[in-house]
Image (cartoon, rainbow, N blue to C red):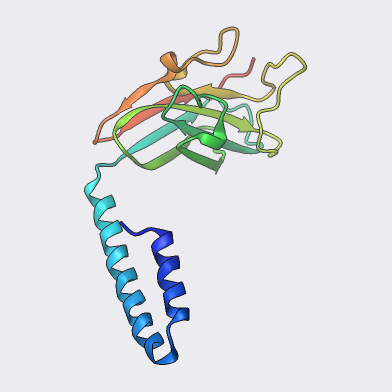
Length: 171
């Protein structure tokens, strides 16, 4: 598999070589890059992937955007967006917003969403930590004395994909 360190080494080799060898080195680098890209494409094409379709309802308004994070670990769910598997920021259709996340390998996942009404890209909370903006989770997992739990929000994605219907709530 192609690694950036290998490219860096080849580029350094090209600069170390004399001008007569530089043209040959450029051809070697170009051939290597083409073959590497073909191999990367083949590896990703052979891996099974699916689509997660998310249908979100319960909007009180069309203000802001819907922020979505897909998690493959209870360590990051629901609030660690920096380590989420995928992130999405989409405009809101107040009747129903539909989003597709792909490609997603088959496995177990949980989704965390909220309506970022003021577009500051964070879930605003009151003084005691209760969300001020509408939020939701996969399986419509409820927030009881804290954020939704992984065990309540986790769902399985098969190679055929899946659909999650999530209703936003405001506390």
